[in-house]
Image (cartoon, rainbow, N blue to C red; front, side, top):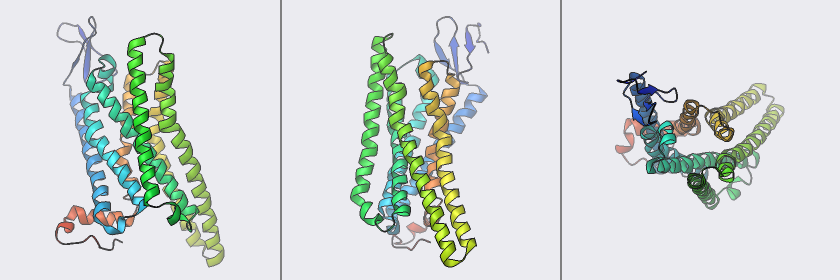
Length: 324
């Protein structure tokens, strides 16, 4: 679509921007598609914030939920809440498409928050998988191995590693701005090493752990079948374990794997900016889905959410309420 004098042209990379074909300057547009996109992304941000607030309030308010395992979920919810509060609005205001043309200070700030919070979210998911491994595979020693101190160390490592990755990411970007041509080592650090630490390594760990959990769950189901002579009970146990693991890993990989694969391929060039930005939003949407996966799945969280949404927690002192 051309502008008033035929100077501005619409590029396929983003429906909210036009670029001057001569000066290569860019300006925002206010098309119906752009407005619809911003409304959709705004709703995504609101749902992300509200869902994670419910998780945080539930665990803080109800004493029954004060467990080391749930503290990991709080860390995940805080991370995802910040994604909804900070990363979503910044990404709408300073989109990937615009930041590729103008590397302003706000674009660097957005990238830093994006890397820190996204990496922390992924590492928190990895820590939760470790917690589930000990709970299912080593139930007798679970309480001694996964306590408050161990969980705090896990949370500290998740945030600490993410901050270090973000610092390395920003340093690599700054070096590329200076060296321009001879930036291969910095490009490798940014496009390969950072994704390995933030995504590929945690994914390998999670896949291995959840495979172990699934195999142990099947073994336990067979033991139940032998001892109780109840094939139906064993079958239900296997189905529940399969469904849980499929949802956890399926949604996680669906959101994150395409983005990081595309991110790594940028080193070779030829990746569409529009595709890359769409995959970035798909990855960020995992922060909206996490409360449904890791909290709504459990009946006691559902009970807590109902009490919070209905306002019952304001009608009396209910922290000791037994959640079903």
